[in-house]
Length: 171
Image (cartoon, one colour):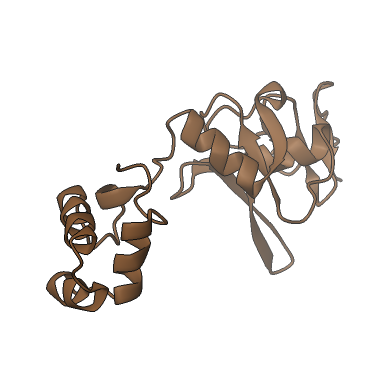
């Protein structure tokens, strides 16, 4: 005889996980367990749970489950942004569905993501001092090819630096 488990009133069924219910704060109730589940933190810092049935296992991020349940469908190439920047705050009021571009802009504005520029970029081959010297040498008539050899970059890169196409903030 199976027992009937009472799901708390403020929890809503998660369509893709029929044995789970979720509330607006991001707590997940399991019918099988008869109580709240304990999500773990993913390697990227988000709370997640693994749903499994009949040999099928899938990881679900809590913030996406909250957004899909209480905000609506997440369109393709869109993501769920944490408005306060806290990946662990999965309250529906802290979540919004945005494009990847909007999510990146939000992360830069809030200081969660560094805007790579100049020598702080991990792939930069030039320093600010190099750029100043390149512009001076090119202005004095030296060829882009000979300057490029000194810095082990292409002549195209030297011309972009000289014309201000790259490193444009550096006058």
